[in-house]
Image 1 (cartoon, each protein chain N blue to C red):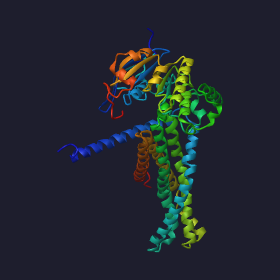
Image 2: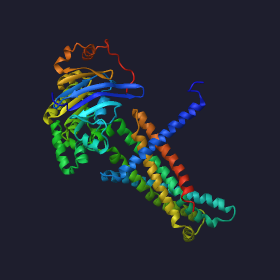
Image 3: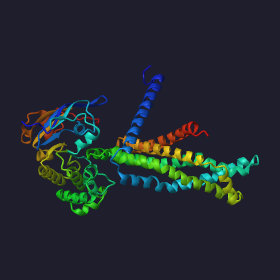
Length: 261
Length: 257
């Protein structure tokens, strides 16, 4: 058997490639973090990224949260109706939104917007030698390009998710009061009755981690892209796919290890 | 003779199994303008990037003023790079920034010059490459290829570097604009008293701006001599190259590095 058709060799090669990738991403993450905490700081770049990651993601996050909250209320109403527990709808909606759906869905949407944009921008800068030009102008590209993006995404995602949480709960409330016939004041009261601060905070902490993942994958794929327009396209796709998968995997790991109470 | 400003000693670089630089040795003396010519894909750009530290050579030494800079990294490398200027082949202007911010980038970012002063300085430098102050407010994408090259040249000289690299300065320009750029390069380099290393395959440009011309082939400098002697080199590779003949000892590489 040749090495090309040998299944063991193929598995081995894929495993080695995978491990090499993991190693490269870890080194990249460490370099990014170092750049975040060491001067010089490019505050204008940070401001631009805060605006682009945070403010311009508001419509996307708001709309998805609104519909998610509404459909969640609808489904839970059907489910709980089977054992006459419709009164628990507000509690379950707020619990589901703050602990899970708020952070995960907002992050996935932002991953589609922001990781793609970062990968495309940095990828184009790479293939047109703009990143090399930065270096020759005695400017560290990690500090100038990557630190502002990583910091902005890590800071803005919790804020976006907090806003998304509120809009999501509002979506559930809107549907419940207009379609399902719940009493408005009663619904809101039930929402708050069993909600703990930790439910919201744990979701926001997750959002911060997801924000870091989004910027990291967007920057990593863009920074390491090669091969012209096609390479930039590949980097953009890889950024969104890898960010989305890592968000879902990290969500499971964080939830099962840290946030079990 | 004086210590070379820049010296490459037996520099090797390979990518995978492909050997790109196979023992390049080259001395560039203070204040002189050396042009290295060579066909597409012979590793000319790799050579410059090794000096700048954008690519780490596999072996060999790179000396600046007699000091080994081959393995200088991090902040020290940043400090070192302030002494260099580089004109990239495609210009490599930052398309998110206006022209004046591009030109003054090194002043603001690395030398921490105040924005107002940097802007005034950018206008001065733009004038030196024949561009009016109104160009400063445009975006690079709004400029023609020749204008982009001028702005890129302005950016390369803005910080008064000691050594300037020109990567195919005339590529993609019409003959008139190419000559304008050649002239600007000669004037600006002389003006700064800088040392210049240019890589090109444009013979007209090489004759115009070079004090000495070298030829890179097969990963080595196979000939180097005064610009006036390039026509009597007696080297079949150089002869073929300067006359642009398809027949000769040089065969074209198919794959790029």
